[in-house]
Image (cartoon, rainbow, N blue to C red; front, side, top):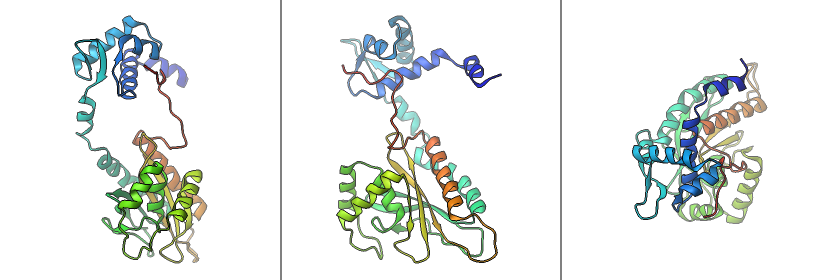
Length: 274
C-alpha cells in the first residue's frame, strides 16, 4: 500500500476541519464570523456550522451573544499547561543527547535565556577520558559564547536590543560591542547555526544549533564544544559531528512543532483581512 493510499485510508476529514478552524482563529486577535471562517477555509457554511457548534460545546471556542462572532477560549492554553512545553522538551532531549554523545564522542550542552542571562539547562559529557562539559545552572556569556549568540540571532531586532539592555556580564565576559555583536548574529541568521573557534577557550570549536518554536524563535540551543583528537582513537570528524548535532536540533524543533525563521508557513486557509 502506497503512502498516499494509507493517508487517504486513515485520514479524518471532520477532525481536519475542526483543527483548521482552531488554527485559523489562533491567527486573529479579532473575532471572525461563520462566513469569514467558511471563506478562509474554502468550506461551505453548513459544514463549518456543524464544526463550530461542536467546538463551542466542547469549550474550545466561544460565540459572542450579540453578533455571532467566534474566538478561541483559553482551553487550549489550559491543556498545554498540564505538560509544560519547555520542561517536556528537555525531558525528551535528554536521552537523545546522551545517545548522540556516545556516538559522536563529544560533549553537549543546551542553553536558554532567562531574564537576560544565558543559562545552561542540560549537559552531557563525552564518554571518553577527555571531555569538556558545562555544569547545569552555569550562567555563561551572551556576547562571547556560541550559545548566547545563537539564542540572540533568532529573535526580532527589538528583542535583541532588549536582551542586550537586560544582560548582565557573566564571569570573564568582556563588554559587548553592539555593532560587532549585531554583525555576528546577522551572519548566524544567514548560515542557520554557529561554527567557529571558542571565544573563551583555546582549542575548542563551537558547534551550536538553534531549536525553534512555532514563531521561529530559538527557545534553546544544542551546543557541542568540539575537541579534536590527535591520537589513534577512530572517532567522527568535525564535519560528521556537525551533521549529527544539526540533525538533533532539527529533530527537537520538529518535536516542539517549531519552524526556523527562514521558513515561511501558511495556514491552509491563509490569513484573511476582516
